[in-house]
Length: 530
Image 1 (cartoon, helix red, strand yellow):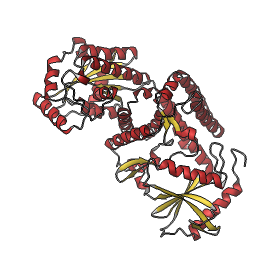
Image 2 (spheres, rainbow, N blue to C red):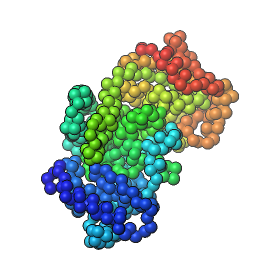
Image 3 (cartoon, rainbow, N blue to C red):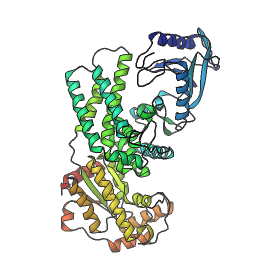
Image 4 (tube, helix red, strand yellow):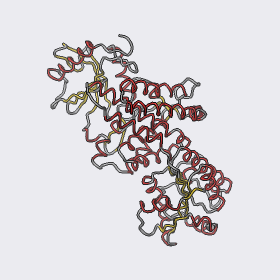
């Protein structure tokens, strides 16, 4: 079979085998009413307790399942890859043998191969969970941390200019998206939009050219899931976990980790749930420390829109649908919005003593605005390879809190904020900001980034501050190491806001209830370009 072509006879024969398995087959276990889910590349048989995924004998150019040996090979690879994420779901690769009219699971020689999975209800899939209102921002934070850990466990793929994660490796799939979409989309308005997006992608790749090698060298290219959208996430035993990773092309799986993160972020934006997307994104960045990756995020979000548009085209053709493909249009329009947004970024520094509630408040704000938040407590520890919840044993003003280390920490906060602002995101920097010089440093970042700037000054009653700090210090469930001695030191060293700073400051007493959406609106109102 020639590359990029499919044998109709082969697919028909395989389809007949699948139908015989459903009607007359021996599964070796009890089955309920069997349901077939069909895509352009596979059939999935739902039998009750177990599911069987059978690959179609197709060669679509970007994947080749045309021979039995290839299908067996990719079944084994799919099993191996997905066990990294959900070993409880992916059980085995099994032969389908016997007579074609009366096939049997486990019989040999194999007429076909299937990936054996434990079946789960479709209601457990994350897109369905969100639709039912069952997914919280806390859930997405937990998954953001989980994904960061999974990425960290995957070996870094550091190679040459033509290897995984290189400019050439990135541009190939981008061009393929446009090739497929132009072939299937004939409406002038759509083709014009595709031309605009193609130009934008070319310009962005050129702008990001210096960044791409750094991503390889710093170990941010890894073997990922490769297809991380809402339909490929499931809640199992209360935990959100990926399944059905991309097995048929290593180049589409061995990618920049931010490419993977962008897929899920884009999908939450698609359904209007920026609160879920930015909660996931922020926790991922906190755990991974990959704030430099935000430079690539807009490009990869647009790329992922176009990937989904291409998949929608292929599904449309497979189902022999006629007329306008609404999903394709929606993805292309979302890509255009993400590429063309002229958002004037805003930098907010969230200032206050330990226990003032700035971290709690900024956590709520980041999903409403939405924004990328950078916490000094976490950045400080990461710079010195101290775990987020690990105690450094530092005394007041010493160790990790030595003035020189503090200066390095604030310098890193400024650098990360610059990257995210330049990428077009609003940024919240969460730190005590006791010193006017540190506040001015971030104001300069806003000036250089042509961003608006505001100060969120968090306060609370003296007794409340002490109670919060003491409780947090005892539980050890936060990156902050502040105790009552630190709180006293901060009070003694707090430099007041200047008259100019006060003009762009919103003071919030966190001991009283305040509507977070109202705070977000007020911050935007007082934020001015500096």
